[in-house]
Image (cartoon, rainbow, N blue to C red):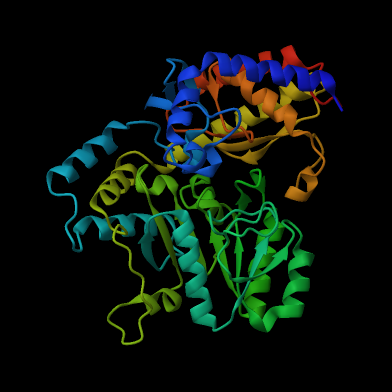
Length: 433
């Protein structure tokens, strides 16, 4: 065991605790009403998480008055940054016309058409309140359409709070009949379909694992899933809740793959709660309420006016194809720069990812599935996390970075310089090649 690494991490955590007494106090106060003071598990980390007071552009301020460069971007949802003026104006206009109208509105159809323009594979689509809901509804649609019950998922995948497969079976997961394959291993899927094919309704896959470590799916693997799904009459569902931001039409457009169903969410609602699922017309038409056998899909806030307004403003006034292209090229360049720093210092760590999304891992070995991360030392990532916070860089403790549109070249320079300083300061205790 690397005692020097443990000592360096303990010292960094001690400095963190000393700098942030207000965040610690607020968590203690919250714990009187919420278990552990928490209502969103991913945000908690010991000894306590930061409590943020405000954000602007790509910057955050915590309750103890420290300023940070926001390199996390609300786990990909804050693509527009904080308080984009176009989105703020749209929300204000919607508020002035009434908050809950108990009816259809013009904005929902306009937003649906705008999303459809980006994802032409969504011949028809419906809204929900989160990516989790979108995935639940897509699975229900696939099962109803095929009359089958099993679902192929991948070890390490995350499709929402009740569809999480990163640490083995979860008591919080919905009780679908899941069968598990290995990510980027087409043979493991072939074996499952050979054994269970007539009973499999869907293959649910992220084109790049998100919470599982931003591990890209090999193009041949993803194309192979399309071929297998077609051959076995299985519905291929692309969960693009995170990867939709990798191009104007998500990763499916980059690879030229047409899934049967697509799920998305996050930034598509302009930073407000949002989910969407859609796909082939013959599947989605089953939700048409004019049909006597229509599938029901309720939800008070599916078409809430604030999300409809914010989402439409973001997609029509801010998020052009060119803006996304620039952001993702900037992210690719940043990831290469950070990895070059690690390689130059012979540190056995790396960032994986695509475009504006990346995650730090405590290994330089090839990472094609979460199983390849077994045995890596999480303390190294923790040390980098706390050391970057000291230098004013906010990212996920698990090592995830998600750039926002306001995160420009100057901000990349700031992040890269801070990261280089962390590596140089701690290279003697970080894993070595």
